[in-house]
Image 1 (cartoon, rainbow, N blue to C red):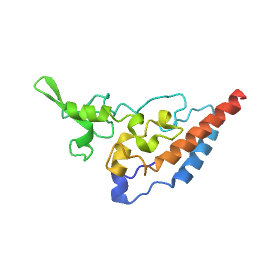
Image 2 (image 1 turned 180 degrees about the horizontal axis):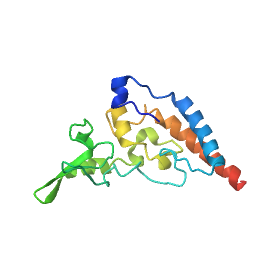
Image 3 (image 1 turned 90 degrees about the vertical axis):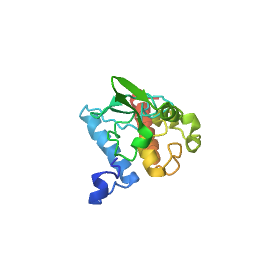
Image 4 (image 1 turned 90 degrees about the horizontal axis):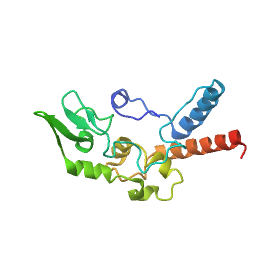
Length: 170
């Protein structure tokens, strides 16, 4: 779903209501299925079991044109406010220099440490959702309680489960 950042902030474009987004995504999946096209949503991944959403939790290694190292594809400039979280190092005189405390902090962001997710049935599929989006909403990587994407993730994964049941005749 549209996340209100960047140009959305300056143009005042708003994300769709989560319920509307979910309903229309399900309709889109119906159309895609009929056309033999695979439609994918990152927060509802039935075949994907993980304790984190993605490699932004410390394992990604993206080098920017300026030599900075980010774990998140959404954070590619040192001027980005999220760089204080996701920029874990830089290239300097032939060597990469890392901030191990940042790597440790990100690596600790696993589903078993997210108390807001403890009773969620999709927690191992969504892995606590996108770290950058959670941080932008709450100011804390570990605080997912006001994440509007949770309802989207849950409804779309439930829809995917229902589709598997119908296809497999369970």
